[in-house]
Length: 342
Ligand code: ADP
Ligand code: MG
Image (tube, rainbow, N blue to C red; front, side, top):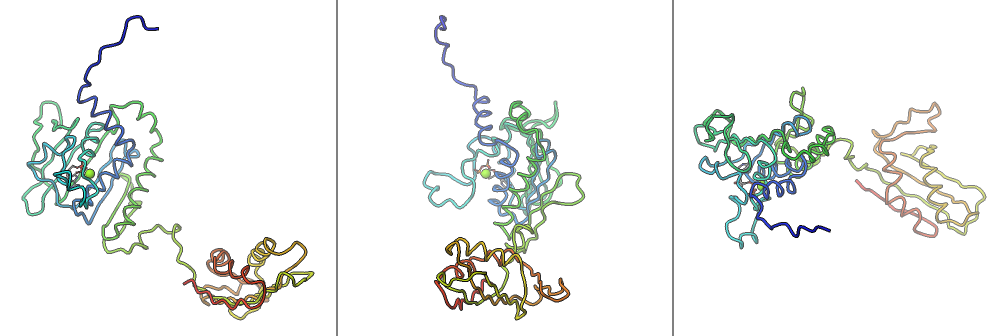
C-alpha cells in the first residue's frame, strides 16, 4: 500500500499530449504513407511517387503534382487540427475528401523530421520548410525557421526522416525494414488499383527500378499485379451424366476437348471427387463431357497419341462453379448446360 497518498493531478504538456496522439494515429511507416497518399489525392494529383529508405524508417518521401500548399499556410500546416478541407461541423455531411481532421501532418511531424517542398501552379518558385513537433523548425542549428524559396516542380514533396526517432519502443518493434517496405508497397499498389487515372511509382531509394510503376492512362485491370489477377478463361461445355440410381460397377468418363477424345487426369480426379460426395458409396457415374476451349489455349502435343492434352487455366476451368454445380444438380440426363463464363 502506498502510504504517501495520491500523487497530484497535473495537466500534461502539449508536446506530450501531441506525441502520444501522434503515436496512435501513425503507428508504422505504411500508415503514414496512407495519410500522405490521401493528401496527394485530395490535392488533385495525377502523379504520385513514393521513395523509401529502410522500410520508411530512415526516409519516407512522397512527391505529387497536386495543387500545392499556399506559402502563407506553411507555418500552420503541421499544427494539430489545421485543415483546408473542413470549416464548420455541417461540412462533414458533404465531405468529398479523404482528410478533414487536420491531424496527419501534425502527427508525422511529432514523430519524425518532416520537410515540405511545395509549389503552387502558376507561381514562380517553390518553398521549402522543416518541421518539428508541429512547428516550423530551422533545417540546422542557427539557421532561420522560415520557409525558404527554392527550385521545385509544381506540387508537393513531403519527406519524413527518422520516423519514431523519439519513440524508442516503437522503433524497436519495427526492426524488420523488409516487412515495413512490403506494407508500404501494398498501400501504394492498392491505391494505384483504385485510382487508375493516377500514375503511381514506389521504389527503394537507390534501387535501379521502381517496384510499382503504373501509367497515367492505365486501366484498373492493368494496375493489378500479374499473378493476382488471371483473366477468366473462356470456355463452354455440355454433357450428360448418369443418375445416382444407375448402378455402374466402374466409372466411365468420356471427355472430349474440342472434339478430341482425350484423357485428362486432373479432370478425371476432380469428377471422381465431385461424385464421391453425392453418389452412394457403391455407385459409379457415367459422365460425358464435351468441353470447348479456345484452340490457342490447348496444347495437344504433349502425348504422341494425342491422348493427353494440356490447356491454359486448367485449374480455373476444372474448379469452375458452373461445371461443379451443373454436374451435381440434376438426378440424371442431359446437362445441356452451355456455360460460357467469359
Ligand atoms: P487533412 O488531410 O485532414 O486536412 P492533414 O494533416 O493530412 O489534414 O493535412 C493538413 C492540410 O495540409 C490539408 O488540409 C491540406 O490543405 C494540406 N496538404 C497536406 N498534404 C498536401 C498535399 N500533398 N498537397 C496539397 N496540400 C496538402
Ligand atoms: Mg490528410
